[in-house]
Every structure is written in C-alpha cells, then in structure tokens.
Amino acid sequence: MKKRYIFLICYMVVLFIPIYWMINTSLKTDNEILKELTLIPKDLTFQNYAEIFTSSLWRSSFMNSLIYVCLNVVISLIAAIPAAYAFSRWKFRGSHHLFFWLLTNRMAPAAVFMVPFTELYYTLQIYDTHLAVALAHCLFNIPLAIWILEGFMSGIPREIDETALIDGYSFPRFFGKIFFPLIAPGVGVAAFFCFTFSWIELILAKALTITDAKPVVVTLTVGIGAEGVRWGLLAAAGVLTMVPGAIVVYFVRNYIAKGFALGRV
Amino acid sequence: MKNRGWLFLIPALAILSISAFIPLMTVINYSLHYIFAGSSPTFVGFDNYIEVLRDPAFQGALIRQLFFSMGILAVEVPLGICIALSMPRRGPAVALCLVLLGIPLLIPFNVVGIIARVLTQSSVGLIPEFLALFNYDFNVSKYPVDAFATIFLLDVWHWTPLVALLCYAGLQAIPDAFYQAARIDGASSWKMFRYVTLPKLRSVLIIGVLLRFMDSFKIYAEPLLLTGGGPGDATTFLSLHVARKAESYQLGYAGASSFIYLFIVIVFSYIFFQLMTNIGKGENQ
Image (cartoon, rainbow over all chains, first blue to last red):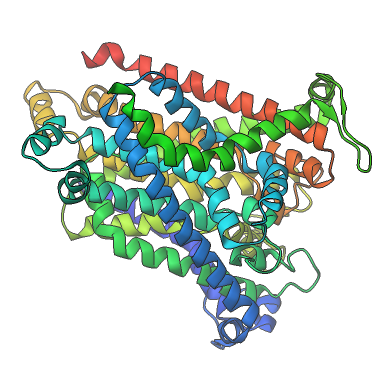
C-alpha cells in the first residue's frame, strides 16, 4: 500500500523537474544562466516577466491565442454535440464508415494540410484571422469531441429520451433541460481536450497567420536558433503559456474527475 | 426516421468539409501532378509516389518514425498503467493528482522543445552537467544517440500522463465487486491484474494506444527546436521530412509523401484497433 505512493510521488517529482527548471530559468538573469548552473536563482529577478508584460507583441499574441482557442472550442462543441448524439442513438446507413472516417481526420498529420489550408483560406479571404486557425483546428478537435461525447452519451439509457418525449417535451427542450445536464461532465472533458490540443498546436497556427492573428506559440519560436538566445525570456514566456492551461484544468477539474469517474473518455 | 441521424451531422460535416475534406482532395491532386512555380501543373500519374518510395531520405525517416512510435508505446503504456494503479481511488488527493497529471499535457509542443533546449544546452544545462558526473559527454548537437534519446524521453515525459489519465478513468469504472470476487477465489495480485483489471481496461487502452500512435507520427516541433532534425538526420521524423518538402514548394513530392504517410498511419491504426479489440474478446465472456 505504501510502496505505490512512494512510486507515485517519485513520478510526480520527475514530472515536475523540467517544469521547475523552466520556472527556475525564467527567474534568473541572463548572466547567471550562461555563467553557471544554479538550482535556485541567486539573484531573483522578475525582469523577464516584466519585459513580456510591457511588450505589445507578447500581449497581443497571448490574446490572439486565447481568442482562436476559445472560438475553436465553441465551434467544435456546437458541431460535435449533435453529431455525437446521432452516433450514440441511431445506427443509420453508413454510420460506421463515417465514424472511422472522422477518426482518420484525427490521425491526419497537420504538416500534410499546411499548403492546402493556406490556399483555401486565401480564397475564402479569411487567411490571417482568428477564424482561420479556429476552423483549421476543427480538423482534429471535432473528431475528438465526437469520440469523447459519443462515449458519454452512450452511457445514458435511451429510455430517458423516450420517456421525455412521451411526457410531451419538445426535442430542443428535452435536449436543453434533461439531456444536456446529464452529459455536462462529458462536455467538460471534451472542452478540456479541445482546448488542450488547440492551445498547443503549432504547425497550422504558424502557417495560417502572419501578423493580425499571430499566436503566442509562434512568437515563442521567433529568435530560437539565433546566436545569443535570451533563455530567461523564452523560459518566462514558456511558463506564461502554461498558465491559461493550468487555469482551465483548475476550473474543469471537477468535471474531469466526474468524467473520469464515469469511466467514459 | 433512421436517417434522421444525417441531419444531426450537418454542422460537423459542413465544418469538416472545409477543414478536412477539401484540403485532403487538394493534397491528392498535388500528388498526381508535377508542379513547378510559374508554369501550370502537368499530370504525371503516380510518378511522384514512385519517386517518394525510392527516396532514401523518405525511407530513413519512415524507419526512424516506426522505431520511435513503437518505442514510446512500449514505454508509455506500461508506465501509464503503473501510475494509474498507484493513484488513490477516492478522497481529496484524486483531484490533485488529476490536475498535476494534466499540466504537462497543456504545455505547447514548442515550449516542450524550449524546455528540452534549456535542459540540454551544453555546459550549462541540467542534463549534461548531471551526466558529466559520470564522465559521459552529452551533446545533442553532436551525437545522434543523445539527440534521439532526448526526443524519446521528452515524449515519454510529455505524454505518459495522458495514458495514465485514460487508464485511471478505466480503473474507476471497474466495480469493487469484481476484486472481491477474485479475492474470495484466492487470486494473487498479479492474477487479479491479468484477469480482472487488464481486460476491463481494454477499451481505454485502445483509445490510449491509438491516440499515442497517431500523435507520435505528428511529432514535429520538438526535434525542430532541439536540433532542427539533426545531427545528420538522426531526429528527422516523417512529419519533419514532409513539412520540409512542402516549405520548399515541392508540392508534388510533398503531396505524394503526405498521402503515403496518412495511408501508413491509417493502416497501422486499423491493425492495432483490430488486434486490441480481438485479443480480449475471448476472456471477457
């Protein structure tokens, strides 16, 4: 009994060494980083963070990322909820094949779609907008959301639908009042995963934006590989990109715990 | 009545048509043409495919990729199961564990790449300094093995929590009665794991293995940031190879290699899916 907790704690420690190292680096001066290896910053400085917060480039790229990620979560859920309902409730002609086809989109490597996306979104005149990135990320998020939600919805007995309809609920009212609250944990889990995958995606976000919708993941990459990399600044920006995710995890933690407890992911 | 299902699929299909279907058709279209900037594309049939399959750079990237993907599955899946098994089942510690495990998953790929660089930069990084204690000269930009191992361990670090979370979800769904019954029958803890836990974990393991397999094929930002695919081509994985061709506007080649790439992923995923759904079937009845 005790042994397994020791294992777990060791694992957690290993898990957090790289994250600690980032935070550690972000609080050091450039001089200290390059001069020697220190486990805790010798002269603690928030200079790197201050620089990011006062730079309009960093601020706008954080905003851009948040905007397109939220947009993507909303679009993915709106599209995925009815689709998942259809897959969980009816076995209609072609539903199996369609489901597999949806999953293959999850597999499609983003690098493959880089050029076609650029051309298509130029034609639609939405290149370099938040909408372009949000739509592009639907490529992998809609299938994922359908997959997760379908699992949750299948766990809810069909009798509930039938009883509600017999009781005179209209379909939209049934869906909003009865069904939706039942699958809320599932929606939470799906939203969490959509947020995650959209937030961390780099290739498409980079290919589809120039300036107006430039996301933070791209801003982070700029200047890497050049001589005299500002490690402290990069580490600070890296730490900051973890923050929104951590906040999201914190808010949906109960849903996730509930969703996981249902054993449906 | 039954085909009402399609009605519910309209929003998803409409969005996917512009974010998946049309781009895929475009890729196939590229792959069948010889495209040269400034002149109109000429139809060349399967020439691009033959060129890709004969290209040693593509073959090398493919073998490296398969080796990498199998390797991380072999490490991440058992490790993930172990972590899930050692997590508390109830109480306030559960939420804490879930949040802690969730954090690495939310780190963008390129930040992972930056972490890798901060940890491995020669003379000041944590890892080279640590290994220097054992007289091991660790240098990712010099030694292919070091670079590959770094990317490998980085992926294990980044994604094992996903497998662990999925397995944990599966474990939570196993009723205690199963274990009690097994205990009454006098099953050892290994037997309990083998005949009660593992079969019940099958469906989440399928999801976990498929997700990790598909996503490991997409690995891109980490090797790009760590060494740009080097030293030599030690960390040039498939997606890096394809993206390089697309960036240099060799669209015919990029299209053909993309399609082969997608085909391989789908075939392997399908085999995994079949294997894993069939393996446990006999035992479950």
